[in-house]
Length: 197
Image (cartoon, rainbow, N blue to C red; front, side):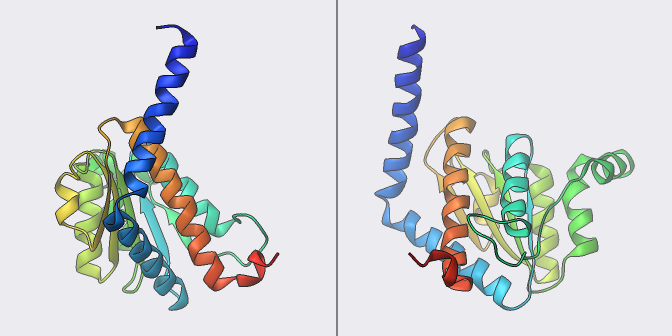
């Protein structure tokens, strides 16, 4: 397969995953609920925490910085943090084990009324599972962006959005689209002036 064929196949696969997602009314309903949960969190003075591993950790950081920085236009920052900075991660994984890196930080920072969004393409990342368990004990709402069959996390969280794909690249591409769209949904409610023509 030459380079051009790889490009066409890859982009076609991405388009197919997006179209399957877009044409599933239950997926869109879950995304709307995600927006509602996030809007409720920010309106009540709560904060957003995110977590994931590898590329999903990068997506978790991306999601958080869009709130503390800005998305399209200037507006006040909103409370969001991606769990798992390097110093904390090496400390906790050394002293307690890697499966505790997110839950330990969440326990120290979160409070009832906050929201945890975990990203896991398999749905079986033990450190994300531990974070969700911790969140539930603290009265923190939980959302998971998942893939494949949703794994263990699908049945654990308040809201699971499962991308209908089997490879991490296709799943993470949809996670980014979900992240960007939920930001716009929430901003349109909190900062309508940013969306006037």
